[in-house]
Length: 109
Image (cartoon, rainbow, N blue to C red; front, side, top):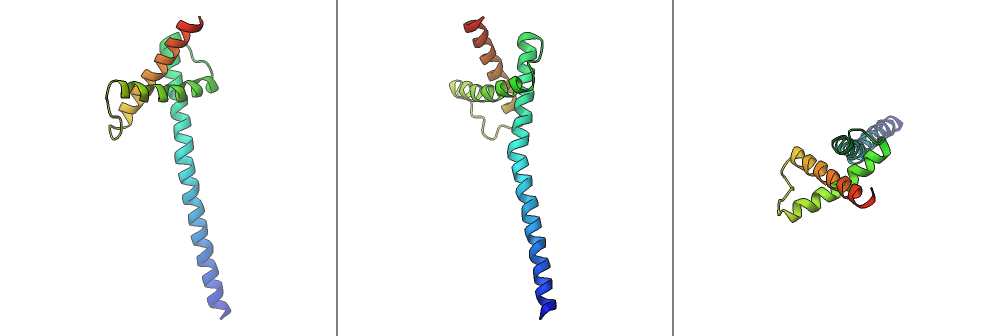
């Protein structure tokens, strides 16, 4: 009886461990990639508009705001981004970030 209980307990621990690993993979997928992509989008937009990067935090903020602006621009142009692929979404996010930087310079410089 104790041997069967030990085997059941080990299988249970293995299943729990696998579940924790899968959960961590999902967390990394939905947090790390958007942050890294946002930093890259902000960096590209800052390099295009001013020729230099503004730092990691500012690039991240520009990437996030630019992503929303790019989505808004795609809706204004009546372009559906869902299912168009990563590159198309990335380009619209960079265009949105450039637009935000251009508006910021026009309003506050």
